[in-house]
Image 1: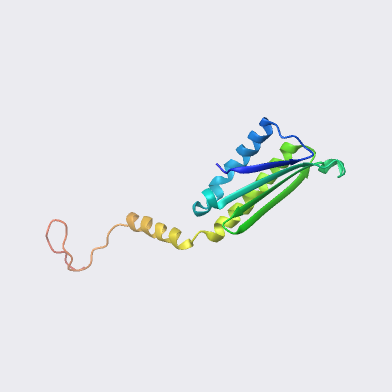
Image 2: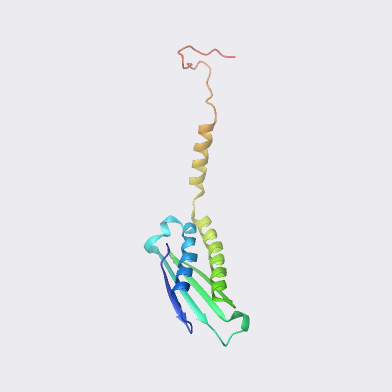
Length: 140
């Protein structure tokens, strides 16, 4: 699970909201590269009730993730705080997928594919090669 520090401005965070945020952001851990998990991952959530803002952007949720020197930021304001958390989670998911694609080496994938294909192909015998029963194969 991703550990997040949750801060509220002009807003009271109850246990249900805290649990909801931890569940949503915890599901993003599978999109974080393995090297960046653990102590290297710092996440902070700021929830804000902005009564001076527009009516439809009253509740604002901002999440900042620091991953090994990179900073991913997502901010959204909506009518409902739960909806703001959902939208921020979707934005962070897209950012994390892009981050992981950039930093995952294609060589490892290519090597795994080559090994898989190598096992799937039938072995080719050269001319003059010895058959498993000990007889020599004749050239065609």
